[in-house]
Length: 476
Image (cartoon, rainbow, N blue to C red):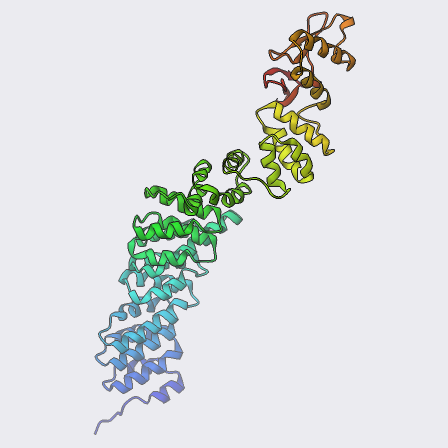
């Protein structure tokens, strides 16, 4: 009869006898080893880690499961490698216990270093079952954990990670735009992972991302799809031409263009050309392009608007409402009378002509329309009333001599020059009065009858409002 019986685990546990429980881990009876491991779990003693790790190679599966639970309860970086390695245990029940320990405990451990180490280890062994917890980890509050999770997902190579990685990338880009601060390392890692994952097998995931509420997510998905040249992708990109965001439509169109895709002359074709801002091609698609052109008109810059208005005119569009868009159209067509009828909604269109039209006659007409609306401007004309009188004479009947005499009389009456003091008028090549030449031969521009624009910090350039000729530049 032996002198000593088996260890009394409840008694050791009640005393908190860690050393006794550690010794019990080596007892020949599997039930004792299991009980000792379970008793050590809540104690979380650092000295117990190595003995418990040793039990992961125990011949009894139940002992291994008990050791796994104890190590998971202990947590911390020292248990990461042993538990992750145990994911390859030959027993299915043990593997399930390890997975629970790793994915539910270590991946959510309060210590960020433990979470990071776990993610890195999972990537190193390319654990397919780890995709879901790693996907959650890409949203971790700690940057290093996010980086480790992203790199692990790239190493595993499962396309299920595509949508979460796109969301992470979009979030970092939005943070950069909004605050000027983002994690460049996370952004680069996510982009590199998507480079590796976004092949033909990822098309389904990318199509899922196209339905996301976030426009930045959709745009990244479109950009990634455009790199995969297959008929299935062209269908997805053409569908993206209907997206409510102009940037996404444009990205999809560029992707299709890169694939050599050519649309038919229908609504889809109009959407394609509108997205590429090829307004003249929209005309080829017929009246179906009109709504797209009108919608685009409000989103493009002033430089492109004339091309849209030209396309609308070629399609036979006639405004049915007296609104701002109609005013831009009629101003483009030179129907100043209709702009005046539209009233205040036409002011923006008229101002645009007044500020930037390369033809100064158009500027004069716009200034006159604004005056009719009691919207006088101090620039680019000092006295639009005098300019209108002068241009009326220049454009009227009679030969050159008669026109010059009429202009000289008008200018003298308006005190623009004094013939009695020996002054004379110098004329533009089109016959419009340009300068007053004094008796001492000094030339002075007739600034009240010219258009003017600032040309530098201390100079103003004057233009003939009849033929657009630059007359002179004067320092101010």
